[in-house]
Image (cartoon, rainbow, N blue to C red):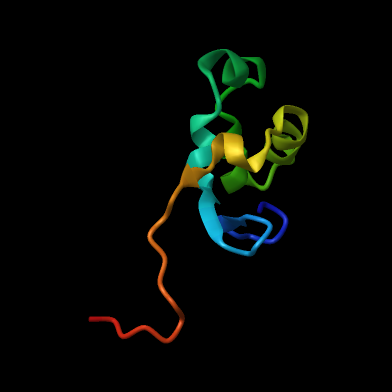
Length: 83
């Protein structure tokens, strides 16, 4: 997500059906006070400063998508009318 400047991605099952979404907010909620204090502050602040700490944190503390995703998002087809 960081490398490609993407704020969220869908999580799909083996059939390609959307079962959840992982967003920046989902990842930020995974950080505990003890984790952020060991990095000298909130890790996500480095996203705005261009630091490498956020990427290193995610690699070190990474979890599986189903553990951090927001399940059952509302989805629509690409040609569905807005109303």
